[in-house]
Every structure is written in structure tokens, then in C-alpha cells.
Length: 238
Image (cartoon, rainbow, N blue to C red):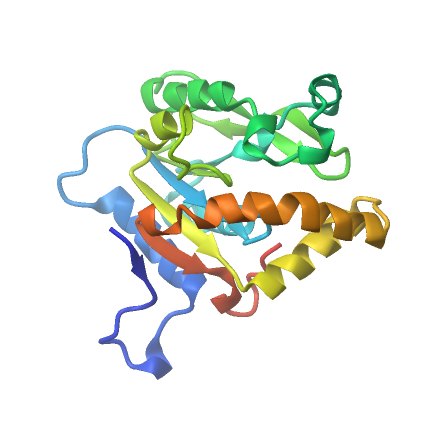
């Protein structure tokens, strides 16, 4: 099912902003009548710089505020970037961020453990933009965690093992923003990481845009669309 926007029955002056609507929908996943006992995994996908990580962290913070500490946890696909040493070994450094530059099977294995193991702390890696490298065990899923929000570019990909990962998701949302906005965010991200503007522009044109085109082709297969450029002030996507 593919749904976009806010309910048409709500007067325009009373419509909640996109971030608030997303929190409401995520909370409903936890309280849905007849929900099976166990842990719920919510997936967020979308092109680079659409605001996936910002939305994921916002959802986790708000759900924990509503439901109690550690009710929700964050598991980013970016923690499964191959290291720069491995990318250099494979000749893939210029394609960093493309599907083949992730440890997709490692991501799937951790997601499978998250859905099955309710008795142990589970540590999840992250990606450090300052180091430009993945870092181990930055995120934690506790035994009493009921919702895990995972996000990444390729969660709606029709290729394996991404399709196996998708079967573990209760819902998969497509996170989007205007292409001009995404381009500006990418330029700011790459230059903040130390790249010269010309190098950053080359990376966007030769790598980020082709990756985004792959992701955009999966938009219609997602359950819901969230536009981060519709966020109210106070939730600033990056």
C-alpha cells in the first residue's frame, strides 16, 4: 500500500506537521489491536540526504518520551558501510554509498537477531561522518525494547538480501525531500567532512545521484511517504 500526505478530512489549518504525524503512526504500530507479542521493526528508506536518520532519531526520542526509556531503539544501515580499507581493496571507494559498498548480509543477520532475541542486549554499529568510517556498538537494543527503527537507502530494493530484510519489517516508509534540498544537504555534508566544494560536487554528480535514482525507483513499493521538507520548525533534517 502506498499512501502520501495527511488525511483529507482534517482542515488545513489543523493538519499536523509531517514529523508529528510520523510519531503518531509509529506509536500506533505499538498499540495496534491484535499486534503479535514481540518486537516491532519499522523501516525507513529513501534517497541520500532525504532526512532518514533525522526522522529515525526523532521517532526514537519521541516514542521513548511517550512510552518510557528504551522502548524504542535505532539501527542504521550506515553502520554496515564497508571500511575504507575494504573499499580500497575492492576498488569501490569512489562508489561509497552504493549497494555493493555495504555488508548487507551482516545487516540482515543483526536484523534477524533483533527480531528473535529478547533476552540479551544487542549492540548495533553506526557511521561516523567525522571519521568517514563505521564504528562498532554505538547503538543498543535492550531486552525490553519494543520498537526498533532501522533506516537505509536500499531497504526497498528488489534484490537479495534486501528482500529478506524487508520481510522482517512491520512497515517500510519512504522518506523524501525536494531534490534541490537534498542536493544542498549533500553538498553541506561532504564539505563539512573536509572535501573541497569541487570534489564534493563531483561526488554528488557521479555517485550520490545514481544511488538516489536506484532508491527512487522503489518509492511506490513502500507503505507510506514522509516528506522531511514538510517538518515543522524544531525538527531540522540533515
